[in-house]
Length: 143
Image (tube, rainbow, N blue to C red):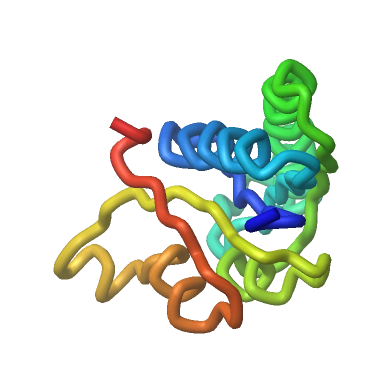
């Protein structure tokens, strides 16, 4: 078996949906592979003064719940063994630090380039640079 456990980073973007589909495809091809889906929850560093911080946590919690439900629906139809979970923190660090005995990380890339990536950073770039295991990046929604 090529991969025993695959971690898929999921944020609801078209690229992360493509990553989830690819993770499922790889798991099916390997037979018996477990797919773990991770959503990294983080409250924005900037908020509007008229919105209390507690509301930001509630909004993020609802977002995480909705995204996990979407991922669970996709996984339930896949026939694969799977788990879905939420972790809190900075996305790249949290993905790299996920400790589940993974053989592969599959994630999307929004394709930032030039100044956008310089100033905003790239989660996928950081994961590739710091991960001790292989990382498969899906771009453009898998097209």
